[in-house]
Image 1: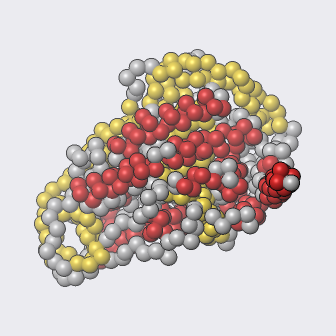
Image 2 (image 1 turned 120 degrees about the horizontal axis):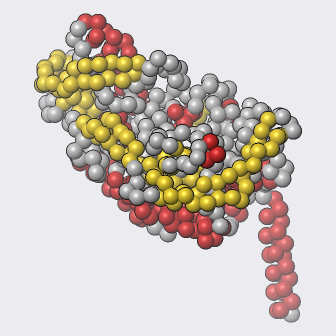
Image 3 (image 1 turned 135 degrees about the vertical axis):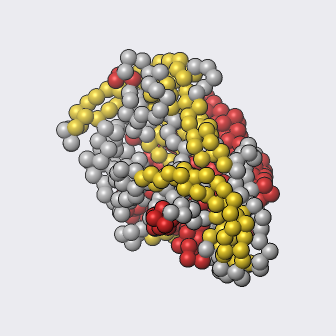
Length: 561
């Protein structure tokens, strides 16, 4: 009787598990045999169904788009109701994954739905013993709703079409991290990066350039001003381990992101069949307008992934999914080390006003660095077929891939460095610039009385503006010479100490010669024009090498919502 009762219990348990599994949702990609990608409503319904299956999932809105769509932030945690401050101080690292920043690159959106389901369903639930997961599966929701078969026509599926690269305001969200013009970007930085302060950030993309032999390519932060310990950890430990796992377990070739080049410069459309033999494999860009570089300047582990555009859609989703899982398993094996790495970087910046490896000054000019010896890069090939829906050529990866030795330009190095000051000081009328710093989570103080200070002035030697607009801006560059001077600052002036965790980011925003800061994005155009017209030629942000004794207070603290 006991044996019969036990068998009945096991049957009932199996039926219960089967019923629970059947109640879990499928993504639109799964439901359509990977012929279509999820719409905004599909993603929201998928998340809702997951909430019905678990108490370990919470959903917040981190931004509202130009068209009024609320952007979901899915929080997967053993204590989903815990306050963000509690999470930041917990023994578990916070890992943030975002997908669909370019809504034509939809693999991450589907993969993250599948990942969330496996965390909720139990297969990956043990990850929550080691970390807290934050997922934004559909960052560019407005672009996603413009699905059309004529978007990204060279890409190999899905047949039902994809969305647009830009958001509803025609902005590229992966160029908006420094200027923060889009509502999506403001919400991301203020309500995710500042509020939850994730130690690891993953950004999921799809490539559309050279015909290589990798199922997926990846990149850490590429800006040399990033703490060198973080860069070394990523390049020497995390990526090699993940690369091995993806090959040994799933037979996916992966490698550092790049494109073929003849001159050591990134050339997205230079493919092997357009040249006799590619001579170089070059990465893309060091500037923090790109998310992975921006997050590195915040002392965080940043990971960019690019699924290979010419693989079929199902495979692109699968390799993206498995890449993320491999990284999560790597983190789960060493959560304390991840937390310590970020905390040590923050402590170093707060103590020194710099980052490890940049004690002599932050870079303001950069160049690609050639590998010491040739590297074997997998050169692939594609077949061209005419898509009957669009009557345009579509590219499909074939099995041909051969290793070719070539120079790799996978990292940048600084060609000019500028030592940061102890602090920057701005005048009361520059509140617009201060609001930008506060958006980025930078600590600012305001003075309570008038004071005359010995300063370092950046005297403008040359000013140049791009002949064409990019993202609605004519990018501006300065060359300056730093000279001593004195300046009177009224009460209510703003003081920004470099001795804080985001030292590298605030330097990039405020330095006169920065290639991606407030000068570059035209926030100082009126003041620069006035300075040149008057003949003073003084950059209107001053450097201090001694803190003033005048009383001052913190202008705004980063508070929890």
